[in-house]
Length: 289
Image 1: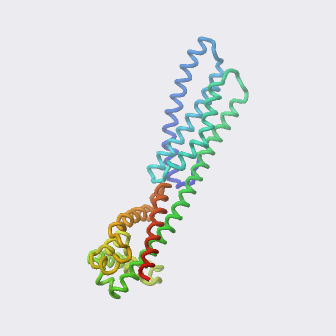
Image 2: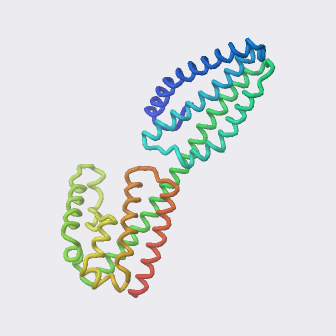
């Protein structure tokens, strides 16, 4: 089973599975020998049936072992193998595993078709694991793209609101209305950006200093005493309501920016926060007008 992840991950999955495969085969073989010895002595099942049952048991155990290895390796690498994948596996592969269990329990006569059926089940289960992973990864990618777009919309709107609001009070607000430590941080970040020797970067205009800000900085600017009293209080009304939401947006922003998985729950939180912040900004702009 090959998954659409890096060769290194695939190799890690295969190495881990080969080690587990030896354990599974040894355990199934030992169990088969014990059953063969007991059932043959009592004449309850033929040797051929026992072999077929062993093959089906081995198919199930190897597939479950491969799924476990994939889950472990992907979790170690930061790729989520829970939530969407777990739900999909429960629905998609669960029926096949249940069918396999039923066939194992129903073996009572030899069948020349058993080897073909065993191979078909192996292929079927492997394909379902692969397809389920693909679907989950596509859903994950879609959430991350949508999350970035939502976050961008909120941050641009918030930046514009702060810039427009403080510019009314003081045209030099970036020098007079930004806490000193925050401004120093921006200047350092901007200097780091401009010091890079990349040719493509030299062709671009230097970004405005305010674009070095993050959501935590927005909180510091809005809640600074003179800014709040003279500029933001008439528009936002309640000082303590904005900070928790912007701090949480910063945490979500870090999740997206650092390529960490954005779970369905995190995506829902982002959408709710974005809708709330954008609505409040719209109301504030209406009050300013």
